[in-house]
Image (cartoon, rainbow, N blue to C red; front, side, top):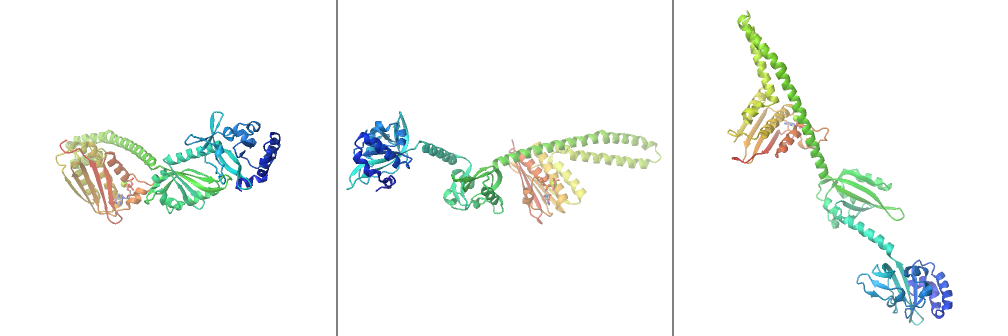
Length: 494
Ligand SMILES: Nc1ncnc2c1ncn2[C@@H]1O[C@H](COP(=O)(O)OP(=O)(O)OP(=O)(O)O)[C@@H](O)[C@H]1O
Ligand SMILES: [Mg+2]
């Protein structure tokens, strides 16, 4: 006996003999209803020619036929079926009609025509076999698949979203094993699904990250952690900045059976933010610097310049008349020196020499003064620049970078020798500034948090990059420091 018939109990045996009389059909039906009350599916029982003997109330709802009308009607009329894929009609009477011919639940491949519409159904048919194995009829169990279908469609849609999203979607069991890996995860982390499914979720986290423990603590409490910016590890060992949301996955009974992690690459966004922040900072700095220079230059011109001029005139008037001509001469010398100093300061503030005589002359002057002031030996070699002026922005940039680099040498390097090489290459200008000082851990400086970050190296780099060039630093503790600045130049003769 098939499991279905077992489930239906012994009523089948008593079905056939009394089913012919309509009057007893009702009694029969009530009796069978009671017998099969536990089955919450639509149930149809036919005789061996496919005529309906029994229809429970769920089958009435599903087919739209009352039992009284359907009784002894052919099942193909009451239950008109269509193959969903081929759209060919199917005969319900042909299913489960031969001995041993049980048909299992169909998976939504069958449609029932109802009120002009198709309804997806699942059904199972089994022959009723009499004493000597002859088929005496069939039992059909039918299940309305529309709500299930809707759920499945929603799931399929969800799956399609997961498949196509840019985000990395990863499913993980409570034991921490990766079970789901979408194409977004493949792109973000660089693992193929076959390389990573079954492996620990921990492979995505840097070894020193406490994040995983935090996520699990949250998940065990049933909490989601949303939009958390962090770093994950890619297959090649590199780190990637991501924004991650982790949430518990629950069974229908509420039990937490795993977690889902959705990660989005934010390195691009972060970089853009950083760039914007830098540009703003630089702009602000430039403004502040300009303002300050303007103020000092005015001060020098309006105050000191006036006073010096007056002093000079006064002293000149005294040279003939004074009994102490020598002292007056000395004072005049002092005034001259002050004028000289003032010009030097003004020059540093705004390198007019740069505009008037060009980069090489301005640097020669600057380096000479710096060497004298600091007692550090300075070398300067240049090539290809003798008869050329460079674009003003390039000259200013090199001049300022050299100034800043010399300040660093003085502040940090404890060097006793500095050399500057300036070379005009076919399409760029190369400046190499080398000191024989202490050197430093450049990576640590670069990696320093924003709050600790200094402006010197950063500013030089920005200056070079803003002109389409770059700054390269070669240094190590104890090994001196060399800066390479490359700035693009228009090709010669242009
Ligand atoms: N030539 C050098 N020799 C040794 N250490 C250096 C040299 N140049 C830079 N450094 C190191 O790199 C760090 C960063 O330099 P940077 O010019 O960016 O900042 P800073 O000089 O400390 O401050 P700021 O320039 O903003 O006044 C310095 O603090 C110093 O430790
Ligand atoms: Mg500095």
